[in-house]
Length: 177
Image (tube, rainbow, N blue to C red; front, side, top):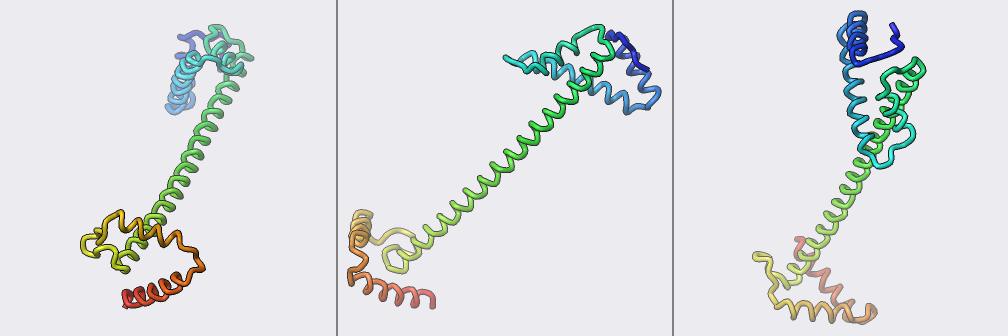
């Protein structure tokens, strides 16, 4: 049954007729559509610059005497708005997935970096610069930084590097045994 002019009372009658013909689910859908439309109109009215489509939706939804063409247009606009909402929700889900992947990648990078730092601390223990029980340096911070800075400034082709490499291999072999 199609009614050409709808008033608030006619909508309730239409809803009742639909319920009588199709069962309870149809009434729920009609109620949800009206609730959704009311909420959407309130949302659109709160926008600073709604789109032309949104303005037409509000205009037709608030129109008291809608024609059949108006009803078809309103239904199409409602479908379009719901589709836009679904698209926005899908976009938000994709954005959340991408953000979660980036966060996981950053966490993995931090974990790898932390692991390398722990290994460097372990090397300082093997070299005898840090107490293995307390984790505290055996020398002052200034002495350690000064010595390490001196090593870093030494050219890589200096014979001392070969001597340190040989000694380091001995200590690492001894430590792993």
